[in-house]
Length: 121
Image 1 (cartoon, helix red, strand yellow):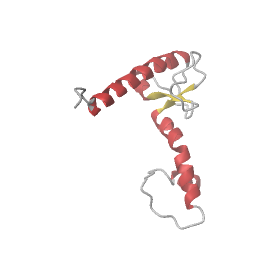
Image 2 (tube, rainbow, N blue to C red):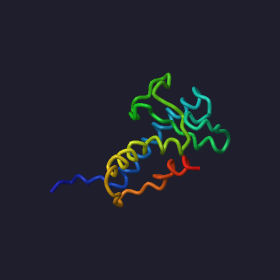
Image 3 (cartoon, rainbow, N blue to C red):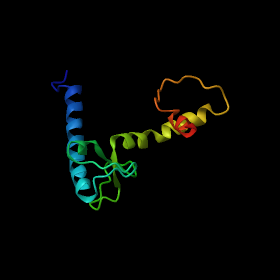
Image 4 (cartoon, rainbow, N blue to C red):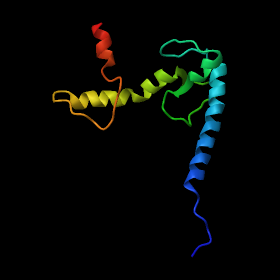
């Protein structure tokens, strides 16, 4: 029997989250210095308390690609950032249901039909 203790999964997750937060803080601070505090998609300005809602989006989706000039980043508000990362998922759902009866899926998209409803008004 080995004397080595198995690492605690909770401690591992906490350490990974702390490392991620530290890494994000570095490039977020740089991005906030490089770019105006405006969402690149919706154009909403952020200042004061709501500056925390402005996030850094990696254009190539590689969080380790952080060039000093910020060429892989764009500042997005929380809502536009979420939309950016769910865009492909929604398109896949629409393609999968085209030409057949729509069946409920295990995944839920609360805004799936919003674009169609907005176009009608």
